[in-house]
Length: 201
Image (cartoon, rainbow, N blue to C red):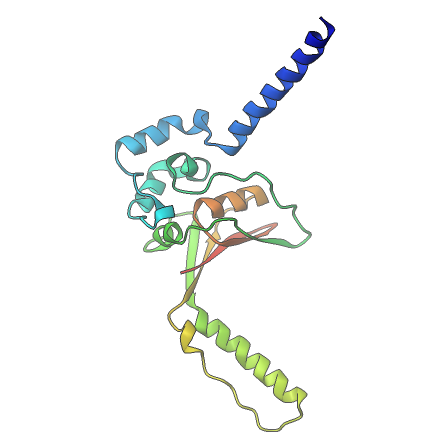
């Protein structure tokens, strides 16, 4: 009789813990069910960005509206949530995201940006060229040579773009990471007064 009394609270605790894990790592059905159902019935969230098909991503984001960050994993548009947040540092936090979805990121950042963000794209070659010029100049000074030659941009990176999304609202580090994961970005940077995400396109 005593082992049964001891085993009962342990089993109840274990069941509670396991049920909590499924709620934490899965879709928030209580919050998302009605909006997700509406968007699915309208056929706006049927594509699969993880398979490279992101034709409907922007329409799905607009349909889910303010619930996009919380509910995109319910329709398979973004990776499931990972709630192991990075601790905030004194100035900023930078983190690479686990599984970026480039097709989702491109679909959401092409054309007109949604109201709460600003999208900026610039050629990677331009940025690399500035870096290469600085390194070359410093190496030249170090070797005490008087002839300075500045290299041109690399043709390998001529077509590559770096796209950065700046969010208008001040958000917590958890929200910043969540926004970036829900858009398929590859890394994010969070400041106490800003959040932005980056992806190569």
